[in-house]
Image 1 (cartoon, rainbow, N blue to C red):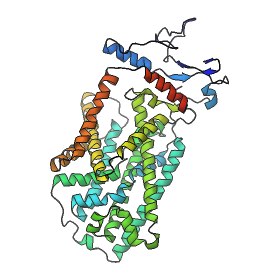
Image 2 (image 1 turned 180 degrees about the vertical axis):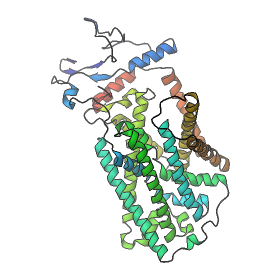
Image 3 (image 1 turned 120 degrees about the vertical axis):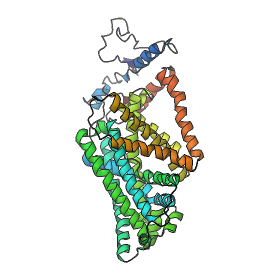
Length: 457
């Protein structure tokens, strides 16, 4: 409401609340003041704390502007909510465009170092594609959206063009007789399980983003049909593109040249494109940008969902009025991403990220198997044969344990410490419901600054 031309914020009651009684700014059902109120630091029992936390999830919204119009009047009659603007081809582009980033232009080095031979490298690329396909099927069980999808579609075409150039160049070399690397393709294959797991890490890094479409099902048109279609089209196409690109690399460069190169695609471009070699770095930049766009687009929705469920601050579930985009969640995800690049060493980052990721992929898949036993009659929009999540779970266990046994590095210790550190926040602030009053003040400030509202308002 407006007092003296100043924008006032109030706490709206939940759906179903009775009208506020005259002369009293207290909702009879919520028993929560809409004006300035006093609140104990923490309730006496956990039940009371949880109830108070649920009450704090009421929306902090401005009712009127200084010109007498409401925020909804300015934004139109539509509710502030995520819109279904992502179609099948945009979904495919999101999956492929997020997976195809810098990995395919760098990871071949790590794959060769871990596998030891050309033949095993190509097999591992195929296995990585198969594993993430089964993984995404298992997971399905358990500024502007349109602008973001346009960027994703364009950059996906650009990176596929780059991979096509590399693949075509390699095929030309093979036709010309440059087949030395393939004549004895499995020579030097390693037999150490831990080393192969590290090679898998490098390959799966190039496939990272395979589960991105899961995070935006609220914005996907006809998700029941388009989600599995996008998965079964996008990941196999990416796998094929990766295998052909590696054939392109190996037809031009030797194993040793690939393993000493810091950017395999750039070295390939210098060898094959001559004065036009500058195209490859440009393609890599566009590919990385498109992958970052897809990661932020999808991961921001994960943060948005966590905020909505109360696992993150509620403000992270708010949407920008008019654009219907989760601006706070995307900004928070961007901040975390910047923290991850602090180490500066790509190999350490890949090991750190892959270890943590596949640990939670395994836990998620295990929960799917548990629910199949404990809740056999639960409605499931998507259902896969039991062997699929079992294989993913076994692969996750292998990818988590084998590298530690083979080469226990400090990055694995850091990963475990960071994961356990989450309990320090979760137990007091989420499980027990401890709340600091200044959080409400910060929430209101962020709402004013970014013009935010919760979904459904």
